[in-house]
Image 1 (cartoon, rainbow, N blue to C red):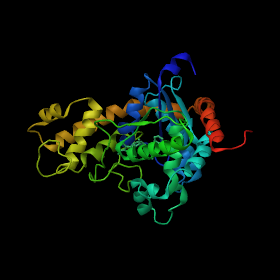
Image 2 (image 1 turned 135 degrees about the horizontal axis):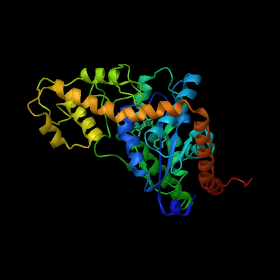
Image 3 (image 1 turned 180 degrees about the horizontal axis):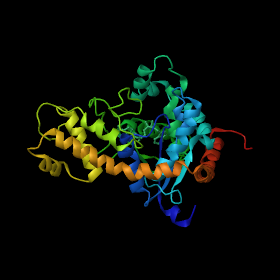
Image 4 (image 1 turned 135 degrees about the vertical axis):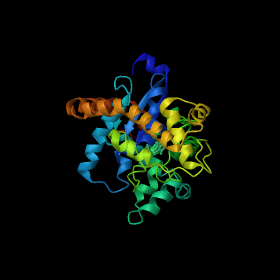
Length: 336
Ligand code: TYM
């Protein structure tokens, strides 16, 4: 680590390669990662260990993992300034996760919304990994003495349980872990499905029109926006409870263009929803176009991508080894 990095606070965040990256994960997380990456010492991970809590096709998982790295870089994460790596390449994550499992209570894991949602959706595969998922996420975060965890709204509960686990561990063994804070953006923290605006936009969405993907072609993006569900009022106004579709489109347009809600209301006052949906679609196409083009170029360069994830794993292994050693000592393991 260079001297400048030592003065900086630390960020850790990650995304599962369980599906292609969505507009939701870009606006809720990655866009902020890029904005924060100049002022923080950042670790951005592709969390493949988490991804296997749902059944994956092995060849697809491998392809998506490497493509996700290309997309991180194409979104603006400079691999020279940020440590970008694949979770399974740094065994300390799985090792600390086991230990934290022993300091995480059955009751608190049972209360996790994501566990309840995912087990309802995958009733035939409610595996132990899905249940103890938050202990692995806590390990990810705590290994690097993370100050800030930039995530979308749905991950807030997991950062909170990380704090609870750290507090419990520190309460027994002294000041081992730093207390991380979630960073949730004011706008964009919960992007909703275009076709069912009461549900979060998700890579596991069964309706292909509800979700926009970072790598999607412009004509497909436009088609989904043209079909986006709105309401019968014909007035562009933000009110998530009675106008979820329009409010979601306003949110997307606001984060994509930087326009305030007031400016959006004025821009589309008296115009129909058709016009509005078209403009939001175009703004998203323009936002994603350079990312897709750069990612396509990088995906073709497998040697470059390999050099980045190997270097990332080395840096992350080095940074996390000290924490793991300290934890092993604290719990009473004999030194190797
Ligand atoms: P994952 O892979 O489901 O989502 C990745 C990130 O994208 C955000 N996000 C959204 N934000 C706004 N609107 C949406 N529709 C939307 N969909 C996804 C998520 O909040 C998340 O920030 N458990 C994590 C991955 C993880 C992690 C970590 C995150 C593993 N270890 C350590 C932070 C720190 C997850 O499943 O994210």
